[in-house]
Image (cartoon, rainbow, N blue to C red; front, side, top):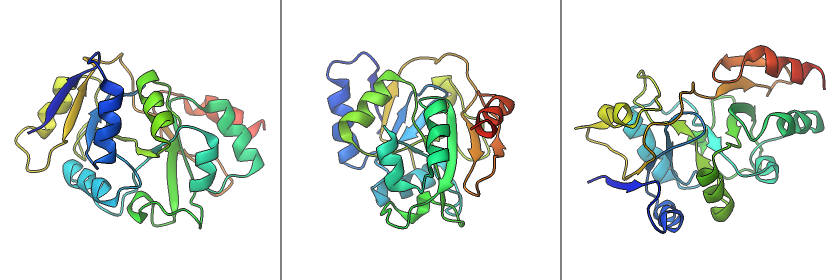
Length: 212
C-alpha cells in the first residue's frame, strides 16, 4: 500500500532519506511538475520506475543532482559547457550530456548513444534531500508513459490507481504552481539541440549557449 506523507510532516526530510536508502520509489513535488524520485544508483529502484511508468527500457531517465561536482562525475563536461550550466542551473532545464566513461550509474539511465539528462532543480525540499544524501536521484515526471505530466496531485495519482506497479510513497504538497515540465536540450555533440520545449523558452537558452 502506498504511504502518503504531508509536505509539513514532522521529520519529513529524515524519512525521505531513509526511504531512498531502502530503494523505495516516491512521488515527489519539484519546481516544475510532480516527479518520481529514487536513488539513481539503485538499479532495482530504477527498474521499478520503468514498470510504474510503463516505460520502455531503451528510453533514458533524467537525473537530479545537487552540484556541478557530481555532474562532472556522471558526464563529460567541457569548460564551455560548465559556463553554460552555471548560467541556467539551478533551474527548469534538463541538459543532455555525454556520459562519463568512469560513471558507474545503471546503464538504463543512459540513452543508446551513452548520453544522460541532468538537472539541478530549484525546490528547497528537493535540494535539501540532494545535498544531504549526496546522491543523484531520478528526475522523471510522475506519469504513465503517453500521459501528461501534472502539477495536480489527484491527476497524478489517478494514473497509478489500480495498477500492478505503484510508487511506494507519495509526498503530498497539494497542487503545485502551474508549470510545464522542464525544457530539455541536448549539447552532447557540442551543438544546441532542442528535445522538448518546457517552462524555459528555447530562444532564451540558445542565446545563452551561442554567446559563450
